[in-house]
Length: 73
Image (cartoon, rainbow, N blue to C red; front, side):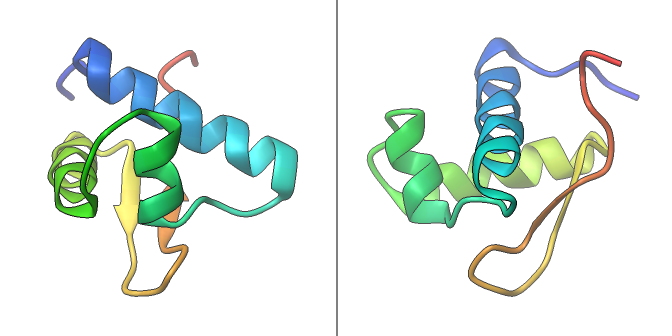
């Protein structure tokens, strides 16, 4: 499996931290604000790239991000 870029790792860590704190993943809009990306389209592009590397699975719901594996493991 391919390695994550620094930006992708930052996004994945933000998702993991949000789940640890609140018990559920952030919305795309919340995630964009957390990592300082201006648009939800920008975050979606990053999330799809992370999904292709098999770290997450995207679902068609408001909080549809499922962690498949942690980059620190």
